[in-house]
Length: 109
Image (cartoon, rainbow, N blue to C red; front, side):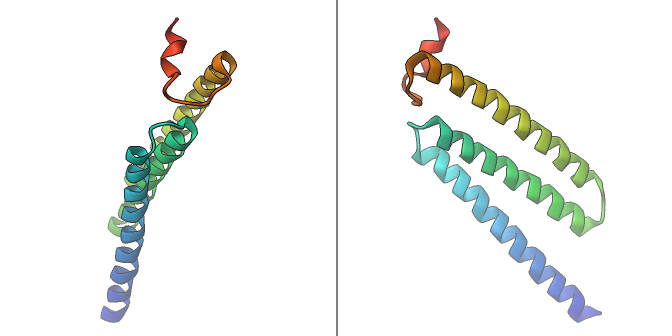
């Protein structure tokens, strides 16, 4: 039984390490890219996916469903964020025909 628990901890630690690398990739993408709105939205989606996976892994570890319910809330939040961002992106493209964050302040007029 002890060996099975050690393998579970190793697998769980590898999953958390992969999740942490996904989080770092999304944060690095947010700071590295300041021009393209599409890449910024993809990095935000990766960040929310990392939080979603983290809640699921931790709820699996402590054998509780609260993490899964919270991750479903995060998934709904990510869907709302992506639809709002896509609507703003389409409005910006219709106005200037350029998908750039530099010309994004033009929408205020």
